[in-house]
Length: 135
Image 1 (tube, rainbow, N blue to C red):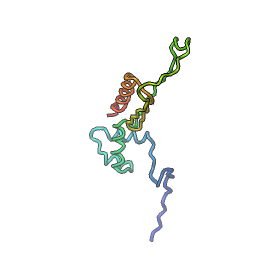
Image 2: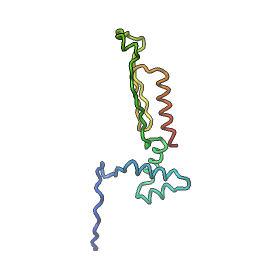
Image 3: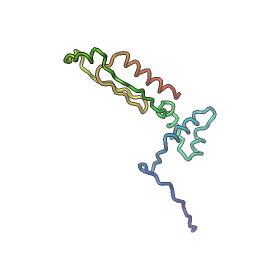
Image 4: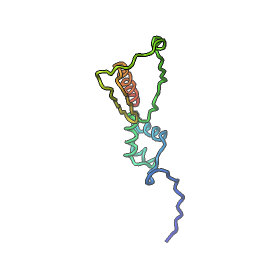
């Protein structure tokens, strides 16, 4: 019987020996898989991946999961009237304050209290813009 010497496999720091590929690598291959005429199976085989994994990455890219999240700076300033006069004691409103959770891809937005319509429309427009940009 012949003796074979195996080269040492790269150390995997993920669970159960499953490699945890960097987001840049996933994004790059998913973009390549979206190009017209590219065989996803062949691309996966060239990189030593299961084609199903590459198809999953491509779906994630199209869903906007690999897009960086853009945060807008927010400042809250009290109007001059409130600064000059102390605010009256809060009055209990008829509607109970609640919360809204919106999940798109890896993004989770939670809005507490009773937001006005303009705020909700702005949040929904921003979420629609980020999820539709990758398609």
